[in-house]
Image (tube, rainbow, N blue to C red; front, side, top):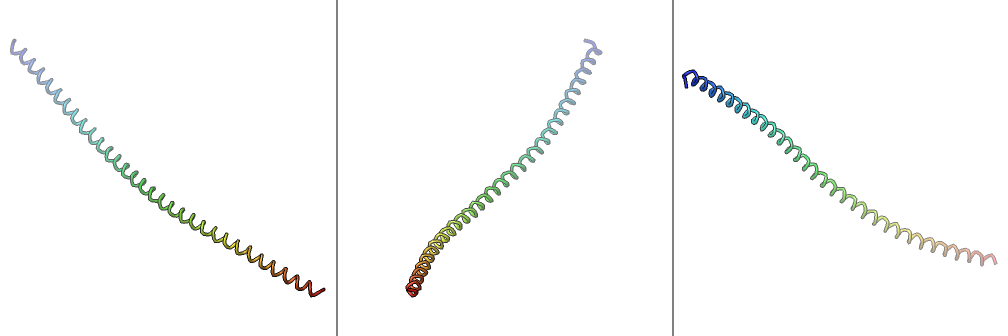
Length: 114
């Protein structure tokens, strides 16, 4: 092998190594850029997930509070209906007494006319 052939081979090897090095560096930079983008996206997804968990917990708390309020209203409605039923019974008894009183007064005034 002549010096010229050796020099061409050396030049070929050097240029090949230079291309490989440049390609490797470009790929490393692309990997770094992709990693950075993935990290940014992952951080964003984590923030969204945290917000969703917070919203879910808040919704559950609000639903429990609403359930408590609804149950309180139901209990109040039941007590009101019981009181109204007691009042209705009392009103019926009062009407019966008034009718009895009216009947007795009518009977007394009817006897007085005779």
